[in-house]
Image (tube, rainbow over all chains, first blue to last red; front, side, top):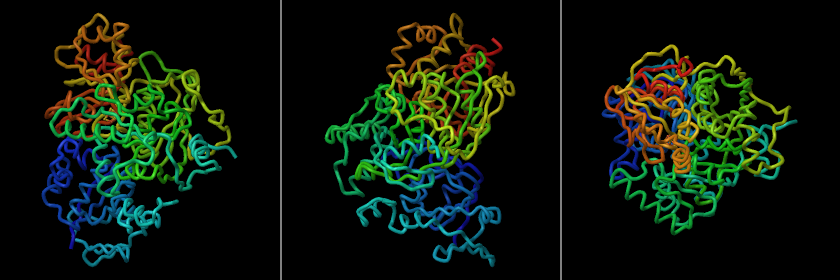
Length: 163
Length: 410
Ligand code: SF4
């Protein structure tokens, strides 16, 4: 079982990892420890591998800092389900193999701290005895994510996605 | 059928007609990265790709601006790592103090009209000021370009913003950028290009202000059709002009006759209100700088308001020029002397306090008026501090009285 951490709209990259906690500033610290360190201290302390982030519109807006994705990846977040994602964050997440699911219909029905089970093969999320259907991840994104991210994709296929 | 400027730039790069919505693989003309992210990109190249060299050294540019000069041993070590890598691979590097990447690439003529310029920085939308397609990416995407010379992109649809008339006195490009944010909202142009029409008269610096803030609305790029000053200073390819029958997803019209000074209140860039709503509010710090408003013209505008006067002893004013050239211009005509005499302090050209890492980090409950582009919670320092985004004129007028002041009322 995983826990749902619910966020609102427009969660920006400065909230996910403030610039002051960038690997550039703290080369010897695990950036995973900085995930939501100021914006959501409870998440920062208690989030466990497999937990799910649920959010409103425009998750990840702001900077291009890939370490925002990396921090959530290091915390082994199972997936982020949001109404929509900001562009650069979406791309960074695909590249690092973090699962993002755009599911505007589902978000309002989920609550903070709900216990859930995510089944990515069947595109479903179980919360109590309620089963939510999740939309398919776009084939283009799934291809990169299932290869293990952008670097693995290029190494395996000797070409870029879309080429 | 006509094409948007974005479609034209991609068509030119690929040598075939390209339409919005297509996923294409392109070889960008320029790929920029700065001191904050280049060390990590080197790691991806070396550790994940298992390479130590880049495909096209001429395609790459490095700049040191985010924490420059270095503030800790860690940042200093990281900068040395980038210097060594640049030297080994023969990559152009702009050293500490030269200025903010987005300003330097324009000054050096590296970003050119019709180019595709990608950067490991979200404000790479700035290059649209010279008529380039500029867009930001993350470290792994950029490492992949270093390794292969190419990247995939979805050719974005375009929103047209149609501007009519001219600014009233005391109102400028930053007020317009904030107003567009107010209308389009923080995610209103996600995955799209914003084309700004009706601005043939607008000088380069105003175009840079607008395009830098395109990303704050979620946009992939922002472009002002190259005209006026751009045609005088750059070579514009003959195919890079606006087609009257290009297809836009929507058009937003803004008449400058009605535009008042604007202010973005915490903690989102689209929480924009007329300045009069918060006039009289107290604050502690002014930050005049960033890739949005740290140029000579911005310092000049502030100086024209502060000339012969003193800033309030209740506030501090930090001026961080966008580049060494902008700083030099400001020293030559007395702009800098005016600012210093009025009580402002000047820091090294670069990003300065914009990301809260140095040269003006905010303490608990500090309130800052910034000419920058982001007022996210905690961006400039402690999470209880707050940032209000304003124009250089509003910053200077407010500096005089120590409370938010409308420059049109002076
Ligand atoms: S000035 Fe601020 S927004 Fe511009 S590049 Fe530097 S850190 Fe980014």
